Each structure stands twice: as structure tokens, then as C-alpha cells.
Length: 389
Image 1 (cartoon, rainbow, N blue to C red):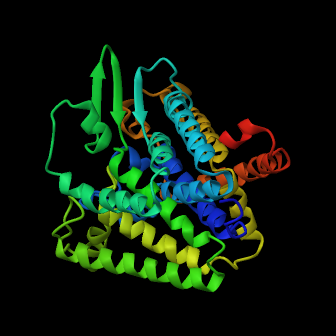
Image 2 (image 1 turned 180 degrees about the horizontal axis):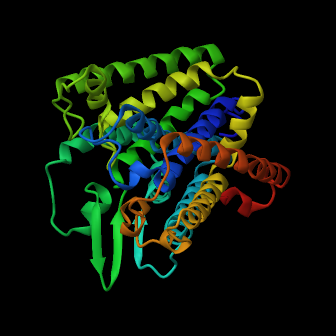
Image 3 (image 1 turned 120 degrees about the vertical axis):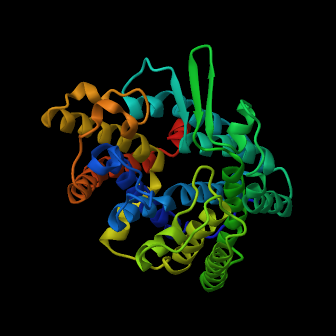
């Protein structure tokens, strides 16, 4: 199967870089924005339009990243073959799960003694890779069917609950499990994420050598517009695809917010259509984008794992300094769970404009480090363990 892919498309790295930068905004908001410590940005009873949109734009990050992870797996498959790719996905997936449990957990709390494990996006990517390592042994159409069934069908399970069943929380119902003093919180139930990665893998065929740039652009434009149209029609009916119906509000702006206010945990069908549809349109029309900004974003997109770990620790360390300087003490940033739910930090934080300035500073600080690591990876391709970073 070697040699059946088109030359590496910079649009994939560009889109991945954009969502990595946007993701940093969400995490800076978690640690710096005052309103985030007292209210939910998606609660229409208390939010403002800027506060809501600051959270809403970051909804694009996780589904696009998981989807493109599947696309990258397809590209690797064409180069390495089924057996080698399956083994690589299995090992990388297990590695990411370990990273979530150890490195990411500490990054969120700075509390290594805490016996609480929040399984979030890195866990979802890792576990989905483990499943994909098995799925790639199936025919392409079978993988497509699995992806479609999971993405389009998992909301049919919304009314099914198994009290205390850890496996159901892991697969579909977000929740926590406690045993022997340990707390495991399944923040990212797996079924729709596995489906998203499987569809991303099938999507990779558009980057095969048999597709010209123009043919790919037409196909991706059609898929993107179709996803957006389907989202709009199904959301309008309020019949299926999300557990939270929309409703007219006191103003046109808030009615639009209600329409866009979708479920992420687990990601509903409508949430995935809303985010992946525009992503496909971007991929369709960004292959010829050039310039210094595109080159900078591509750097982030080429080293996403390195960026993710580094940005989390940098943001948390910056928040620790901010807490010390504003009288809350750096110790208040050594938390026992989600920082925005930690009582000692009530009253801490800054305005939304200051939060945006901190976000820009974080991204600028990360750029030279990511550029250095990209050069390291590019010039040491024979070092096998660099492929896992």
C-alpha cells in the first residue's frame, strides 16, 4: 500500500495548529477569567455573549483533533501497512492513556498526591486509537459503517442508564466512579469519540494520490455544507441529536446562543456536525494558504502532543504566579479537582480582555519552543520514540 498517498497536505497541519491555539484560550479562561470561577459560560441565565462565545469557539478543538488523528492514522497506514500501523496505534494509544493518568492529571492540579483521575481528551484519543488499531483490520466500508453508527446512533442511548456501572460511564454517561479511596471521573465517554476517529480515518482517503486538489476540494465542500445543513435542519426540529433543546430567548442574540448551545460530554450528533462541517470546509479551501501566520500555525500543528503538555503546565504556572500576586497565594493553585470549582479561588481572576492578553502571551511563548521541537523531530526521524511525542 506504500506510495498511495498524495504529498503531505499542509492544510491538515494548519487546521490542527489553529485548534491548538484556540484550545489554549479555553484553558487560559479556566485559570484566569474571574467569571469562570462563579458561573458557567454556557448557562444562558447568567452568561454574556462574549463569555459564551469565548467558550463556544473552543468546542471546535476536541472533535477536530480527534477526527484529524484518524485522518493521520489513515496516512500512516498507507505508508506502513496494516500490521505495523495497528501495532503503532495500539502502543501510542496506551501511551496516551498513561500520559493522561500521570502527566496531564498533575498538570491540571499540581497535586501529585491527589487520588482523583479525570479521564479527558488525551484519554479519549488514546482509547480511540486502541480501538482503531483493531478496526483497521476490517474493510474500509466496515470502518465507515462503525463510525457512522456510533456518531449518528449514540444519542439513541441517552435514555439508558445503569446506576453505578463504571463501564457505562466509560462508554456513554459522563460520571465518576469511587473505589478504595480512588476517584475516576470519565469526562469523555468513548462511544462518539471512537466513531469520530473512525470517520476521520475513512476521511483520509480524500488525501490519497487518486484525488487531485480540485476533486478533493469539491468533495470536502460538499461534505462540509451537507453537515452544516443537516445540523441546521435536525437542530431546528428539536427531535433528535442533543439532550438540550433550543428555545426562543429574550433577544435574537440569545436565541442564536440557545441554538448553538450543544452537549459536549459526550459530544452529541449535532455538536459533531456543527464542528466537523466547518472543519471540512476549511480543509477544502485552505490548501493554498501561505504567509508567515500560516507557517507559524503549521508549526503548532506538527507538534500537537508537545504543545498540549507544555501549554497546560505553562498556563497553570502562570496562574500560580497570578494568584500569589493578587493575594490568594500560590498554594491556592494546588487544587483538588477542577480549578474553576475550587472554593479557595472564589473571587480570584481577571476580566475577559485581560484573559485574552494572557492567552496571546502564552501562545507567543510557546512558539519558539514548538519550532525547536519540530526541528528536532524533522532532523531525527530515525529515532523511534520521537514518534510518540
